[in-house]
Length: 132
Image (tube, rainbow, N blue to C red):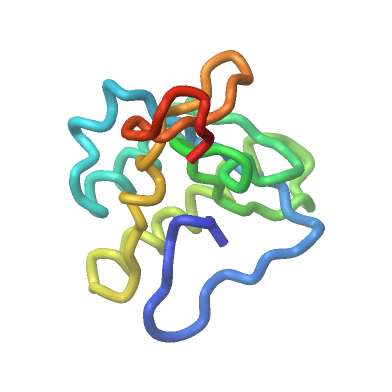
């Protein structure tokens, strides 16, 4: 399950060591349009459909901000199958969010500056050189 998405009632999504992860990274330009959970999940779905994402064996959102990772089964033989799996889960998240049963922690997701060229994230209100 994505680090930033919380299911309020019922079961979430089980993680497995056999998952691949579809990582969607956001830019500062995207932030203006992502003010609500609904807008954010729709943007995630759009990125997966347009293949504007990366597939990795580890979730990228555990190490950095401005990224959400969606789990997908590793059993698929192609990246297309992995993306279909992630898209199906993102659509399920959308239904949960629209029904009020899930939320995305946007404050945590966007509380630091994004990584640039492997530099560390630093809070925008922190003193220079202090990792937030």
